[in-house]
Length: 279
Image 1 (cartoon, helix red, strand yellow):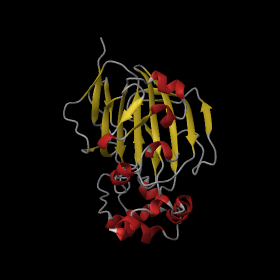
Image 2: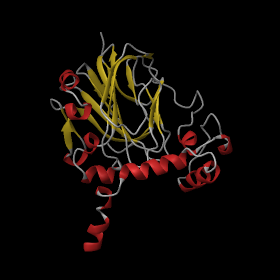
Image 3: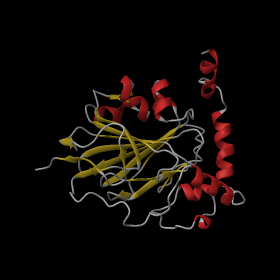
């Protein structure tokens, strides 16, 4: 039992940023691209059937392989115009209503939205709204897409730890998503405020977006107001380069989750999370 406890602790002490930078440098190496892509593809049984580029040798780096695009027809958006689309492929770890400004996850874990977002004004607007949390594992498609039409109005980058964000670690470390490095994107939509939060994690080479956000790792808190761009539902918003977590929160409105949703289920970009009820 002592050994088991000993080996469960290193994630608290390992130089997370150093390891992630080393891994990121290797993943961005053109010299190491072919052997690393071969190892990752084989080790995670990654299929390129849906990829726009199906030849693994065509990717110049492992990072490019992780951030690969899919065929245009691979992730269609919901047919109903007022449906909220899932922003990422992965496992739906939690979803539901916010309790005031508290976000309740599986196994009783909860944290404040203001702590997650790094400020209180947006959290106030999101009180008693809704949330969904999607975990992207390494073999998942790594691009993140807009769940509904909206305009980017601000972003904030927050430095932090780089704990792993898999379900096992999330269950052990309180406030994990509020402790890790993250990028918060705020959008105004026809239904109110939408926050899309990219959570960094160990071995994630970087978080990149389609707008001009700072490169990771973040050395300091940065916040920028913006007047766009405008995104349509399904547009490419950004991507990870290994695997991590996306948390979305949206304003209190007439909204109903789809009844088929279950915590822990596999889900894909474009799957309908629920529907906004409009007159």
